[in-house]
Amino acid sequence: MTQKILLLPGDGIGPEITAEAEKLLTVLRDRHGLDVSWTSAPIGGAGYDAAGHPLPPATLEAAKAADAILLAAVGGPQYDNLPRELRPERGLLGIRAALGLFSNLRPALLYPELADASSLKPELVANLDILIVRELTGGIYFGKRQTGVETDYKVGSHVVPSARVARDTEAYSDFEIARIARTAFEAARLRGKKLCSVDKNNVLESSQLWREVVIEVSKDYPDVALSHMLVDNAAMQLVRAPKQFDVVVTSNMFGDILSDIAAQLTGSIGMLPSASLNERGQGMYEPSHGSAPDIAGKGIANPLAMLLSVAMMLRYTLARSDLADKIEAAVRKVLASGLRTGDIAKPGEATVGTVAMGDAVIAALG
Ligand code: IPM
Ligand code: MG
Image (cartoon, rainbow, N blue to C red; front, top):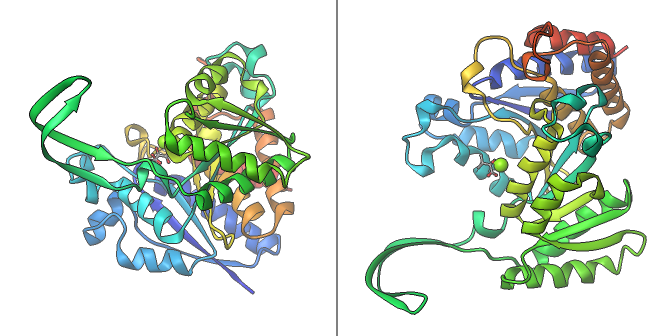
């Protein structure tokens, strides 16, 4: 049966890199037997401009009906002063919640050709290949919020008679922890068989439960070596000796922070795709980078993270890992041939634009 893809170009460089993904999909459909159809819809700032909301109802309906969603990026300075419920990010958070995309896979892979781009010494990052598994629909991102004036607010031994207070809540159930732990153990099983669970169990109740449940789940995965690390130490270890990690599993908030650190280890955020999956294998795929408003419309954005997101979509939702392998091999070939967009070029090196890079990957598909 024809599988349905929803394209969400979003803002900034989003439309430009989405055009490259569409070109790639067309070739896969016409020449490689990929049975898909696609439509596109506005989200983020583009959703707000078109329909007054970062996640217009029609976009959400289309997302629910799709097998896979390919999102480019949302956000831009022109939306910075909107109320929080209307900011572009709400489009993203809204889809994550509405589709139950609890499992966020963020690979940080260093391409040998780009080893100089890392801010770490080459020997620390050579052949780096980490997978961060971030819980995406729970924790403080979606916990109860409250803002108001409270009386007799305690600050240590001090009591403030009247204070403006804002609260966000970190809450996790055993159900949520167990299901993300299973995703991470399964992923580790297919890779280096090492899983590091990151928490703050020396301070937080929610982290104590996290650790307990991860240990319970580990009984079903005796072939995977499980370790635990406190989040502050994990941040330090990621920049001290990143190659000690294989798969890392952590909460929504810690995963947000650690995945940015891991991305910078590769020095090439323009190269990193990600996947957000629900229990039915429905997924949203997106580059790890943002909408880069400063270079939007100039035709110079790096489309590779977007094209590699198509590869992840083929692997995790569309059951065509043969085509995913082809795209990843094509990207490596193009890098090996010396083609560079501005973000991954060394000073003085010649660069190509978005369209030329997209064309080169398609040409290298074979
Ligand atoms: C990410 C982003 C989002 C997040 C923002 C845009 C809401 O930083 O996907 O990592 O915090 O989850
Ligand atoms: Mg983030």
